[in-house]
Image (cartoon, rainbow, N blue to C red; front, side, top):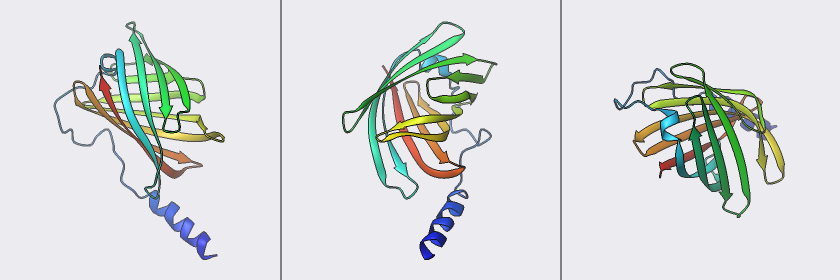
Length: 174
């Protein structure tokens, strides 16, 4: 019974953790332009850590992006620390001056995003491949353009509405 209470307490407290908002004060005057940053080759490194802070998985990813004026296509090739690989191909449409929608295999429904200043927020539900199958999770991705060639990404993951971990990625434009 004590274990159940402790787990319930952790779940409740994890929902109280502060998360970014598009209205947060900006730390720069730069404007994040998703289609410009991801048009061409981008490389990234990242890791997943659970709600207790334990790093569970690391990866490298190469992203080849192309922007045709309406559609941003991103081919993401992941290589994990155990040398397993995964490819995800995103098709994103700009739906307004600062808004986006997108799809990719495994994504349930349509992903939605919004740019605001140096920040981009991207939300979606996905059947995420994991070493022993798939896991249906929701992502609340936050990207901040740190410089013209560097973006920091912090993605909050939930399952059944409960925080299960975070993915932190740094992107470098080549």
